Image 1: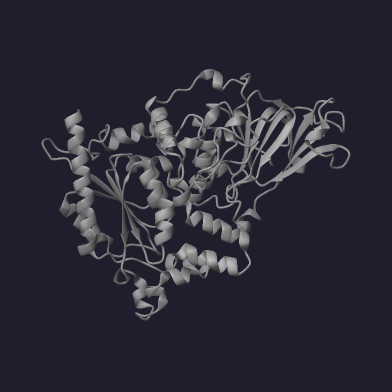
Image 2 (image 1 turned 120 degrees about the vertical axis):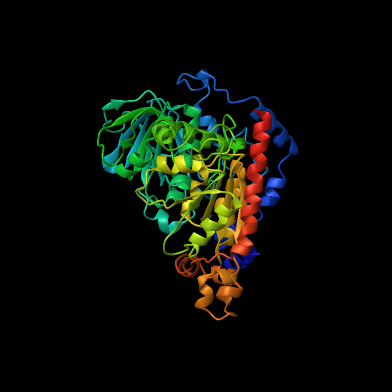
Length: 511
């Protein structure tokens, strides 16, 4: 209902493009239902065949270019696109092809004699002397084609895109100007992207960066070089466990490395399918978000082995994941509470801990800081059976939980219903978690002490959200804390406990 109101508001205000995006997003369920049923059958058949990678698919001499597999990105919005006939699927040597048809991101493909030139924020593609001029018109007598791209996955958000460095992709005659000689020659493709924008927020780091990087680079089986605009040493260090599982080569700082790097294939920009997910229909080998999560498991395994050895017994499958216990002591399911301070904090958290322990949980309270090592957070949540947290960027860590045997309870403050479901609820289900959303009532919000009982802030949060993000942020995200009604919330705890113990019993019967 809120999205339909927003559509009418934008349409009447003359912003037809934004209105169209809201309309399509609001009706995305309809478009998904229009997909032919045979597609679901084929998907299940492919998944049942397992994860098979033929080495010749990744060879540079493969007759079928790697670039073929990135022509379609429908973001779940259209059921009529033919995923077997993508845009830019037949790119020829010496060509630049850009797909700008999607509202989330642009992506460009180059093939041939590719050379970086960071002083001019350019990547040049030198065409053979006898190449066909018909592919594009001459720009200035020397350039055959000139494309501009900001390789970041929030294309629709003009304010943040204004901060992203723009890259020039220029096709030229090999003898039209002084060629930039190669300082470094690479025999694997390049993927060029930016770590600017909202980088620094863990949700955006995964949603706008790491997952799209996985989607875009997975087909290369680590035989790919990452070229990064707005390079940050801290980002490379933070994701140092993950990056080697996506690329076997050190990343290149595009702005800080003035050498000319030469490639024969390059992808500029990243694909993004939806919020914190991977759509197997759009992947070469039908990888899903579960496959991405399995990659995280491999990435952090070495680092946390020593930590696990000291702290707790190693878990297997869906068996209850608890700290080491005394002989004959019953296992307790492990519950992790992601704690906040300040806005959206649970003010009666101590009582929540006691209530969960009374039900039978082994409770761990975790308060991630910006400097907390991701491997330590992964270790804690990978060994958990349930997680509780209030809506916010830290909920991104549900990706660290074990699919098919873990429960994620998200506390939803006033005014955050849509965001909580879209950014974390639906993605958690796609991962295979048991998701339980707990929508607080007005008595559980600190806002009840600031506003009259009939104020729209309390009675009609959607009307405030329609005024814009700044209203949502200022009122519902920055000024609200939560005092849980433990009588109500206890029902969610019991539901989680029953689910976990049932899964545990099933696991025992299969063992």
